[in-house]
Image (cartoon, rainbow, N blue to C red):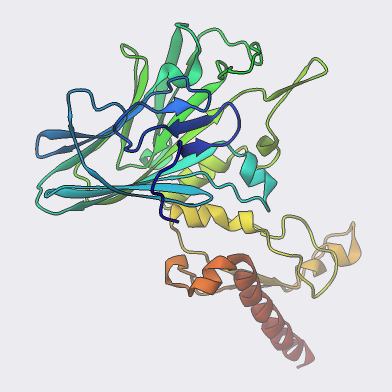
Length: 355
């Protein structure tokens, strides 16, 4: 859908607290705001051969990287900027897939930057998240930065004195919990204590880099005097780590049925959310088919016995190379591949045992 004019443009949309919008025609006309209108400043700059261009937030005295288009869908907003030296696409994706409540409740927005050099030698990205996101007044803020395995960096910040669910009112923004910004080894992410902000720098850009903006609110609801965590923590508490590991080249094994299936020769529906990690990390999916594993335990529970188990690794599935209809129905597409392999191997195993 081409957006010609809207009252406000969604950038981060998860819940009434973690909700950031652009209220101007161009992303660089004004600072970003909470849906209540309170400033929640996030700024973005592109340095092209020592010349600084602003593409997000109040441009102030900086030159702008002209915005040439704005596209919006139900889950993503994409801005395109271009001059004679560089082209930048900036996409904000909040995966609000209504069929998957766990995924909907997960407070993570993916920010993709796609840089195309036209007449430039060096392009550097600077992305700055201010403490506006974690406080209402001039409260003291503390932050830290670190590195995961394989160079996946992150930084976090929040109020020094935490009081979850301690505010009330119609125009209340969140002032508890911690905001996180994370990226892969193309990015250097630090906490700037002097300016109370998280800063990301990515040098020598030419292609795509992705950041994750997330919010851990510590407690989401006061249930009769008891703090309760967000629904996503019941299953997706390690989702950021999983994405980080996959971007760093470490394989993650997921059982897409989500539970054990006790009915022989049948498959439970594969959950769409099981494939979101691979889609967001742009990693191939390797279908794994297992035959006769029930002979180890389930067939004679509680005894464990030796058994001949067949495990077959299928050809990698590169999502970007699939036909549009298969991309749209990725879960049943992968399920059909595994099902076909299962029954093929079952027949071969029966023939082997008959000899």
